[in-house]
Every structure is written in structure tokens, then in C-alpha cells.
Length: 90
Picture 1 (spheres, one colour):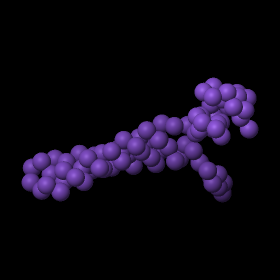
Picture 2 (cartoon, helix red, strand yellow; picture 1 turned 135 degrees about the horizontal axis):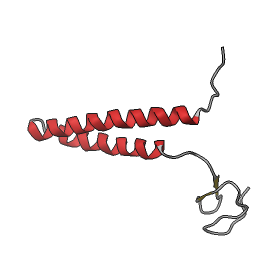
Picture 3 (cartoon, one colour; picture 1 turned 90 degrees about the vertical axis):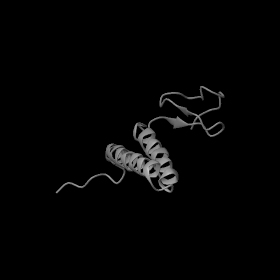
Picture 4 (cartoon, one colour; picture 1 turned 135 degrees about the vertical axis):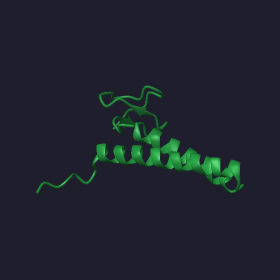
């Protein structure tokens, strides 16, 4: 039986995508519930929607590239110096 690699980027992206969709739907439900009857839903709903948006944005990230140690910008893998500040990349 073949084991998965400990760092499965595609699996993580799928989990974040599905989780983001489900949490977003729950957030919309809480918001509607808050508009109809309970005021607490107006607090919980938008917070869940914001978290869902963050999950969906992170799920679209492929995790490739090099981080600049000086300005923390992400650069393509083949570069030797940062596009933003010009610092040497490791």
C-alpha cells in the first residue's frame, strides 16, 4: 500500500476549497438567520464569511516560488535576485 507524502499540496488545496465553501454557506445561513430573528447571527455570519473567503484565497495559492528575506515578497523559482527590492535570493 502506497503512502501519501506528508506535505500533499493538492490535498491541502482541496480541503481548503471544500472547507471554504461549506463555511461560507454556513456564514450566509447565520447571516440570514440574524436578519430574520436573532441578532447574534449578524455577528457570527459575516465572521464566517470572511474566514471562508480567506480559505478560498489560500486554496488558490500553489505555494511555489522563493521568498525574499528582506522585503518578504514572493518571486518566481528561477530568479537569483528579488524583483521588488533587488536583494539576493537564497
